[in-house]
Amino acid sequence: MLEVCNLSVNYRHTIAVENVSFVLQPGQVTGLFGSNGAGKSTIVKAILGLIPYSGGVAQWIGKPVTKQLNKVAYVPQRSQIDWDYPVTVERAVMMGRVATTGWFRNHSRKSKRLVRNALERVGMWQYRQRQIRELSGGQQQRVFLARAIAQEADLLLFDEPFNNVDQQTETIIFDIFAELKAQQKTLLVISHDLSETLNNYDQLLLINKRLIASGTKEEVLTNENINQAYQYFIEKAVS
Amino acid sequence: MLTWLIEPLEFEFMRQAIAIGLSLGILGAVVGSYLILQQMGMMSEVIAHAVLPGISIAFFLEINIALGAFIAGVLSALVVMGIQKRSRIKVDAAMALTLSSFLAMGVILITTLKTDQINLNDILFGDILGVTIGDVWRTVIITIIILVLTKLFYKELEFYTFDPLGAKACGLPVNLLHFGLICAITLTIVASMQTVGVLLVMSLLVGPAITAYLLVKELFQMMFFGSIIGMISTVAGMYSSYYFDLPSGAAIVMVIFVFFLLALLFSPSQGLVTEPEFKSKIFNYLNRLIGK
Image (cartoon, rainbow over all chains, first blue to last red; front, side, top):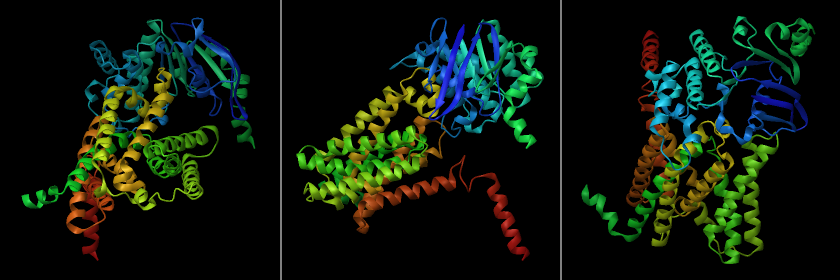
């Protein structure tokens, strides 16, 4: 169980996230929604300790998340990665095993098996010797998904996994979410796609610097909540 | 041909220069690979210039000049990172300011500490043909240390340079890894100063690594082929310097550049000439010429 309590983040002199609290249960997929600049990525990065936060706590089963990062898998936004980096698909997925393997050791047979299984699961095993630069956007996303699977984490955080991916990749990702859910993993997924894919989430969180609403699809997606979450865009459209 | 190759080796200064050149070819490519993958190519130039105040102070205190250079170099890299991290200022501007400020500090220190016996010309342009046996050993030892460390921390450094946020999210000590890379870069620069000088050291770090970058698909291949290119370049540069009476540092840099151009044009996977569209482009162009 992930508990986020009164999380606040300031970027120098502006407030990025204010007093956000929520709970994620094992065996659930939670969608984190909001407009651009609403603070979705900021929340995920703060939970992981990638950026300092000014207040609040993020705890995994009663202890700070940052003290047990070996139980967490993080899939960054595709735009944060240099896809020209000289690394093959297989080695990129193997990076998910680096922390578990530990210093001064070579990757174990178990790690190699996990990497192979993960790549087969996302349908990328036949591309293992390709340089990541030669892949399509959807394939690149699947490589990172495979890396997260190979990590064998209990808490998985995905930053915009559906951005610019093809239909096949989207289906694969949701299938894998369902499998991870069945394994009692906890998933948090950032997205802004308010379409029929919403049925894949057990819980929705709507963010606009602070938490606007949380709960089921019906509870969260009321006109009033959406207005609040996307206020800026509506005001801009009117003016 | 053989005598042509062997003749320069009869001189001790040439043998030492070649030994140091081979060593630097490897060192530059390995450290340079990390440098360019972090998009910090210009950082080598900052560090290379920022060593000056360190050299001046070390000279004044009569301690090892390389040590002073190393400390000042690392300090300058930390200043750049600090400015970049704590403000909105972009890294290129932070580097420009740091480079000139450290250089200015060096100029002032040389005057005020009366350490103007330091031969600025040697520091700026180096003289690979004037290295001593001690220089050779120092460079070889630095190269071996860096190679061992690279082997030991290869998987962590690969992860960190590819996906720093992902690496941090896995709990890797990314600040330590970054600091380690900065130290390795500075060490390489201090070791190469004497051979090609601070102005040209960037070429040894960046050139062989980016040439290999255009040819391979894995980091260790980049380091391996980069080392080969680096070694061939330094030796070829010295031979042309010997036979055509060229300044040795500049000759090395030009050979590195020629290798890069060849890779840029003819790389099987990424070359400008080898890309499928190239033939049709030329074809269209010729068609238009004939049409006229």
